[in-house]
Length: 468
Image (cartoon, rainbow, N blue to C red):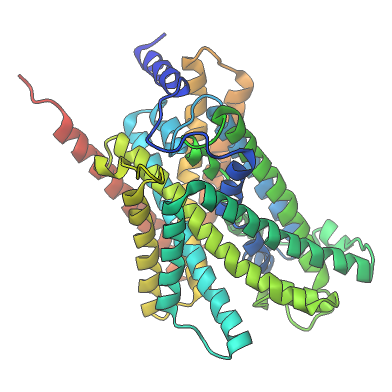
């Protein structure tokens, strides 16, 4: 066994034997652990905000694009779940990479994952602003002020994340259960009212343009990002080496079926309507009216707003755990690793997570950007962070298993396939920039990542012992 492989095996042995951060260990059961991943994805928001964007590119192939995205997500989920059987600690995707690949790649995964959670949290805070304006105009006939709305959403999410991780997990769980259930009820009523219909145009992918499927795939991947965030609860989940891998795969599979069902149903439901699905500000509201249950459409809009808040909470929780792990790895000051003895939560890391979310959205609001613009642009930025972390985890998996004497040709093949798919998604993303704002996002991300790696290299040089 090589020196690198021996060190990797020793690290995993230490972690799986009970090395803990100062968090409340074992307080989260399987359902609450699953709730973290589900809430970070905010599945109930995609039918209203993401699926119409995918439809604008893919048309009748929208459900097929989500099938492809589900396959790509399951490849990542396979790699993550295999790692999650070996190690359980906060910020696990960073841990997986840092323990198996050269340290500089571990640093890249850490900074990429941190940005991914922060940008996703800011994106859905913008989504919450979008729905607060929509509901405010509908019920109060006035538009809420953006800055106070964003401040309240980010502050309450930070407080709940600080107060009790079990409370926040249970809150996120019920929010998503209610929101998703309302959407499924609307779809069921559509079938009951109009009968079970098979839309052959969709099954034949009629009118779909193959070059447009790539950019559509990039947009659909945003619906799935965050599905792995249960791995950040390795220090707090019960039986983490079993519950976390299961939560990751369950989340990917359930979300894939849900998104395909919603995309197929929405495209079918808008047949014969004067407006297009891609132009609708609240497609499920219109479908609820078409099904004869208009009040449920309003409830879905309310549920989407609350689901956005749950996603901000989930991203704050996940980002704080990544910051803790980065602090332990020497990438950030060690005080970010400290936790509150009473609540068992990392207060400083939570604060450092929530402030950038608010600042990013507040800056965009001051520039006149709408909530939907924030959701789109910041979500596009977050995808690059997730793809970086996903690709590096997939790359690291064969090396980690070889170090533990568990080499498998099947696992290596899936790992290579995952890396290739993630890189293809990046290529599609680069080719899909339709305007100057989106075209700048890759360069912003590369600049950020370069700064993070430079920070790591400077820190390592300072920490190196002086030559005698």
